Image (cartoon, rainbow, N blue to C red; front, side):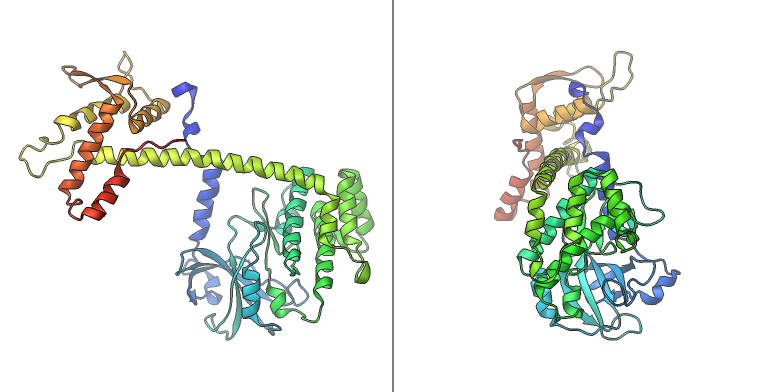
Amino acid sequence: GAGGRTLSDFFAAEQLRADLATRAAQSTLMLDPEDPRNSFTPERVNEFHTLFPLDSQIEDSPHGPLGCPSRVFKAVSEIDGGTYALRKLDGIRIQQDHNAMRKQWGEITHPNVVRLRNIFITNEFNGQSNALVFCHDFVFGSMTLEERHMRGDALGGISEDVIWSYIAQLTSAVRYVHSRGKALRCLHASKVLVTPQQRIFLNCCGILDVIGDKKIHIQDQQADDLRELGTLLLQTVCRSMDASLPSSLAASIEYLSAHYHPDLKDFVVFCISQPGGAGQVSIFTACARVAGRLLEQLDFAYQHQDACHRELAKEIQCGRLFRLLCKLNMVLERPDRHNSDANAWAETGDRYLLKLYRDYVFHQCQDDDTPVVDFGGIVQSLNKLDVGTSEKITLISRDEQTILIVSYADLKACAERSFSELLQDGNYTQQRGMNQAYIDQTQFTALDY
């Protein structure tokens, strides 16, 4: 290939493509007609359709994090086509104005907080009236921390790098929410989502502000968040929901000391041992204790951003060359409906040069007539055509009776003229304003990278 590059060098990384394919597949999940879950899954709720239940059983006993049973559905909005998660709560009493809470939490936008989009009451769930529904963004490919790290089929041990990544994301989200005068109130392993890329998302935000005890002061709620943060980290590292029980606490702390850096143990102990009342500290104090570790995670975030930009640049190049190939193939060997000779237009003038160029790029052979398969060379040549360089190439007809030496600039001019003729023949030029904008968009312009 060109410069020794392989085919994969010109396209997005395979793992990224697989992740995006999984995302697309999850957005189209539908129940089979014979699936028993259809009994509690309506065809649509308000503006949402294509509902798909995400939990295998009803979540949350009365003693769970939310204090009431709930079900979660994937749904697609007919308004914007986006995919969302609808959480339906049963048997609850609204303690606060849910419209006011929707507005307040809708303004909380953080990369590690699942954004609340809407709260509404509906009668469209099968056989149920006045169901309270919270609509949050849908996090593709995620599972809860409990599912990932604390169940019998959970994934293997957790490295210290992953734990510090979790801490950086969790503390950043808690700090952001607290700085805006709110409390999360749902830092529970069953309500924190994690993706295969170790991204953390705090879920169910705003629910307890609507249905929970409104008498608790916000400072006490924020202090509870800090203690729950320490509890969540201890459970995650020890891979057990029981790790924070009074009977297991000493053994869990000892496990931390034996297997991880002292900074980690100190941070977890600091969080879970915070007193209430006048002696409580804020999340800002907690962040200050691990500031150096948080800066390391910032370095990783910038590296990941750079990697994403590199992958995006590949796809932009692919999109540009795709447009170029579309235009060439609309011109090449096109039948002429105005002439009895089907090849009168396609085989003459500029089109003939482009036809020879196509053979030069895609149909080359070795001296022994074996085909040349060189993706790098193809991409390199198409880029030169798109730019219109002064480099010259030799084009030879299939019968070897015609040999032409032309530059990429000449070929680019041939392509532009031929495509413009095609647009004129298709009456794209009758409306002057619209036509000029259309032609401007279809020129073979070079992009500067």
